[in-house]
Length: 408
Image 1 (cartoon, rainbow, N blue to C red):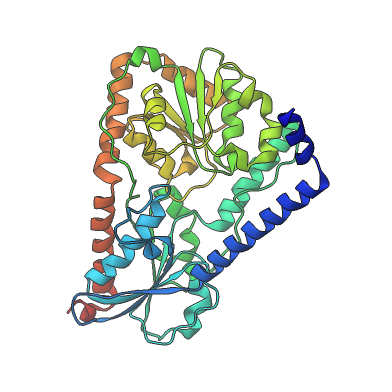
Image 2 (cartoon, rainbow, N blue to C red):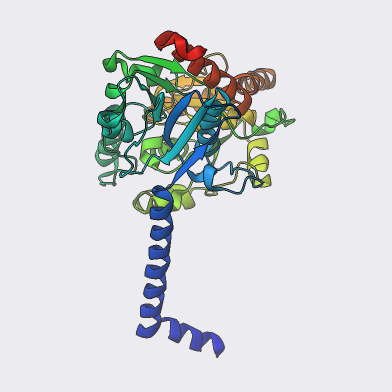
């Protein structure tokens, strides 16, 4: 009886109005908090008399946290932003930090450096002193390439399935690199090639993956036909449609999907059968890389798939390498895996099937050898410590090349 009354109440017009009002209030409060933080400025002070000032435009979240609270590992760029700014402070500069979404800030002082990731560099260049060294940090491929690649993937889905899906990763192109003196990038040669038009010097820095895991002790014979899909949203951009259609034709191979599929509601409707009604495909949803569930899933798989059409460094791939998985990735994922993984320049469904099938035929020793090589590469290159070391080295190299007197 109580359940019936509750159901009737939830179906009432008054309940619907109350629920909508609550949703609007929550959204307004969230927008107010975002607007407030977006326009804040945080300053880091060096331990010595400042050599000069740095303007830093990236993710502000980590700077607004209690110093005793660990920086969340949900994305590498939160910690990375804090570390990049602190490196300038360690080099003796006072660092003014603003959000990359701050579109109202105007410089009121001279800056020795300005670092940005999107639109602030082109917006603020006219207000900067002429001798300011401008550095664009590239955490994507060229946005023109990025948008065109996703549009091509969406067109392919439309052709294959007769459906039109919305773009999820489109961005407004920026002219930051055109206004920069130098750039840094966490990508590989693919990523850098998409910026070759600029003729600017781009320094590679490693991705600072947030997790470190021991090499797994697993039953390689049992897991040889079990694969993991691990990505963020923008599922056509990432190539999940290709993986689903491939594994629907691979009944003896199993695919576990760890991605925020609920964000792409039109994709879920289009691929509902593959996602939820195909016996060899298990859709888990988003998982925390620090949690037990992620460890359990990776311990049961031999390889991960990442078939993206455009990336700035493929953090998801590198994270799974830390978990001892063999990477099966598109060329455009932006990760060098030739020595141990499978690099796909052709991401057709037939080629995905061929590649996955090939992996299942490899010996246990070969699977373990490749996985170990991937894990050792991640441990050597893709750590917070290595990122900090390399980014500091790059900034000091830029100083030496651009203005040696700043080294004093």
